[in-house]
Picture 1 (cartoon, rainbow, N blue to C red):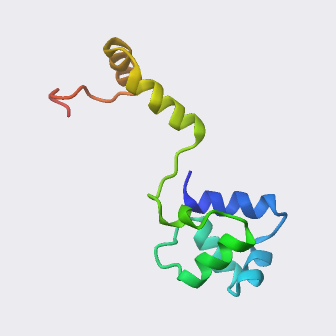
Picture 2: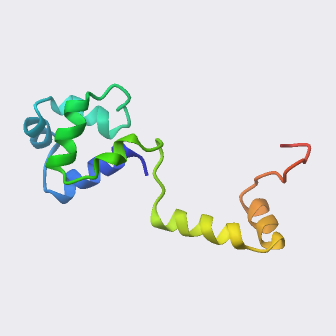
Amino acid sequence: MTIGDIIRDRRKEHNMTQEDLAKAVGTTAATVSRWESGDIHKMKASYIYKVSKVLEMDIELFFQRNEILTMDEENIIVRYRVAADSVKSAVRKLLDVPEKGSAHA
């Protein structure tokens, strides 16, 4: 899940259109659409602050890596890390991820 996805989901949870959010933070619906599409690398600090307040978001979300893991993804990673080597190998085969040191890596 990206920050754009989170903005879109929070906006919808607040029953707001892109136009509503744009008016609330002082920009255009086209700009909100770009944010939701993931184009936030040039997002002004003032907009980050306003969006986080209007949508009741933790402002730190804007400064994390581009891709934010869902709870399911985090659980899968945690379970993978503690799994037996045979399970890890099976997961890599299922997902077509080469083994470390293989010719395809």
